[in-house]
Length: 235
Ligand SMILES: NC(=O)c1ccc[n+]([C@@H]2O[C@H](COP(=O)([O-])OP(=O)(O)OC[C@H]3O[C@@H](n4cnc5c(N)ncnc54)[C@H](OP(=O)(O)O)[C@@H]3O)[C@@H](O)[C@H]2O)c1
Image: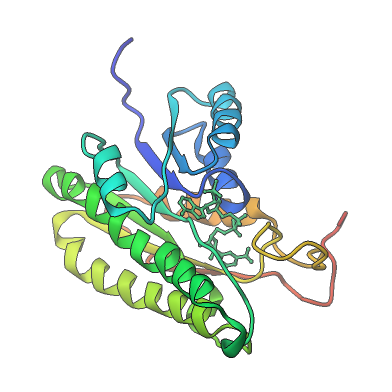
């Protein structure tokens, strides 16, 4: 097999929702490494992406496990890292259990460090690369029931901008995409999602951010449903 000249993108949280849509959006132009815990879903998506793309592989990985991430990604080099994996337990502060609190901080905050720490050195030494993070409008808004989730997404904004300033002169870009509500499994069953963005809408924004000319950086990109009162056409 000849070496690929296509950029390689690694996507965390690729097994469903926004990450899955990003994989399908990038597959025609990027070689892909798909990461999540659910291997069965990853394998199905790998097959789907291979039909419209070229090289696709998956790694079943819990991104909250620093040692496992470092081990699995030791010899992996990517041009684009999409830090997308995230969880939400939206409930009042006093009803949030310690497990729910730590789970959100582990996935939304600590995993960002684990995966970026593993892949950034390769980008820095090659003088090219892009770290794209899926933040949220919750990264600059607040709402009742969001103490932890909103807190983690505010962290993402600070992390992304600080990292951007730190690595841009080495040729590495950092972007944060901040969607409003998106119809995915992040919301409990029974939630009215008819007015929300579709995962593919966010994937389009990610594609735009990671395919600009090398000298141009889209650092923040906010995508919203037009109106919470209007269902999407066809929804
Ligand atoms: N939906 C929204 O309204 C919305 C709005 C703004 C921002 N976002 C952000 O978008 C991102 C994706 O969310 P989504 O809406 O697509 O949610 P989703 O449908 O629930 O998907 C979450 C993904 O994260 C993965 N994941 C969770 N814990 C993981 C772990 N420990 N290790 C590896 N992968 C893990 C899941 O895969 P496995 O379960 O297979 O591991 C899954 O692929 C999140 O960062 C979220 O905060 C969502």
